[in-house]
Length: 422
Image 1 (tube, one colour):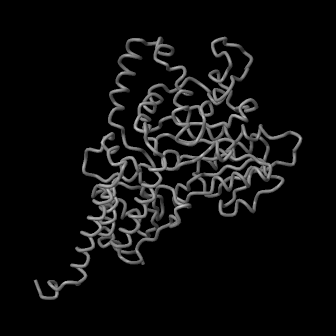
Image 2 (image 1 turned 90 degrees about the horizontal axis):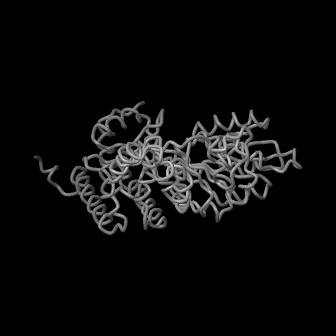
């Protein structure tokens, strides 16, 4: 080895020193983490770094045993009796009440069931039907132009069904688009591509001031940060449970209808489960009271009860602590990326301001498909949003600061191996 390589301060030694410094910093942060013990509740036995909990949360370790009981004892032995003796029939409201504190809602306002897409349809059409018929001029549905695609598809279908035009608006320009024609506004709390956190309190207040109703999609915020549905006066909201709530692949979504709207909430999907007396088998529909109006058909019991078991990991967990760790993790990851990534190869699309950041980091990278494939091959599991976005989700219940450092270091190594596009 030449003298040049042995001299302190050379690029190679500096980089090694930097690796050690950030790794030590990560270890110190992990040792001080009040949520660190929660990681043991999850099935994370391999040596990979899992940063895709914003797409599919990790499996809580106790869930398989609970699901096995549902299958072998409740279904296998009790059979039809489990609808009453096993609490199957009341599961949608019972589990809704367990999710409620995680999104700042009181009891009796959330029902679990169906997919996010189905619940968006219920919420948007239901919101239109809540409008005062004395104001026929309110005839526009404003929808987040950067929304997750299904919300846009469903909103357009809801617009066709209600006869109202749909107006796509960039969330940054939403306040200026509100007016006397605005009927309903559908917004994502956190942008799925960039991780930008939109101003739920401010937007909701402005929507109400304009005389309209606010519908929020919480898929990328429920379980990642405080939401405050009741405190902020949100009208309706939907969210999935398989991301930060760790309910499992395809676990049922939830629908929130504020208590003040429930007596007039008219679901466009009035299934038999939403009837005030389902087993009367009446040909005429009479809506049940409360959140039950959001039900449609027979609940998907296996996935429903897997979700209920998964929610046990939230017992005693402070959402304030979750948010604090989320911001610290994403701050630290960005610091590590800046240290390890070759200059100019990646750029963060996620806002630096904490008030505008969800619990993920999105990096723009021209070679994103090749880079993410190489990262996954190294055991660093994030995800790709074509054509050029590397997305890393940070779930505070089980993600470590050491995971953030290792992922950023691997990213730097991959970027030196994957040729830059012209």
